[in-house]
Length: 129
Image (cartoon, rainbow, N blue to C red; front, side, top):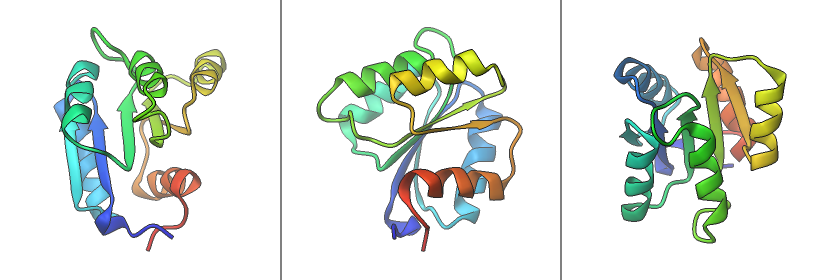
């Protein structure tokens, strides 16, 4: 059982309001070590400096979108096993299938609540303590 307080999480979203909402929700679940990136490029830079236990990334972003970020992370031996949850406002099954083929661990459709977020995280990393 992972201890939420000791885990490090990277939130990747080009909208500051979504990053803030996600960070607030994660704090309600007991997470304290939360970093943010406003782009896929920023996320890759953060990952060169820090190791993360979980990445939650938006799909639709400029330059490097969530899917490209996921593929880049999965292609790097140092990060390929990092749990990755994709957040999206799109329920298109083909896009979800594409993310699964690229190695996403789970996905969450916006808008979502804290309980849904908790279930998605627990499905990926195990029950939180």
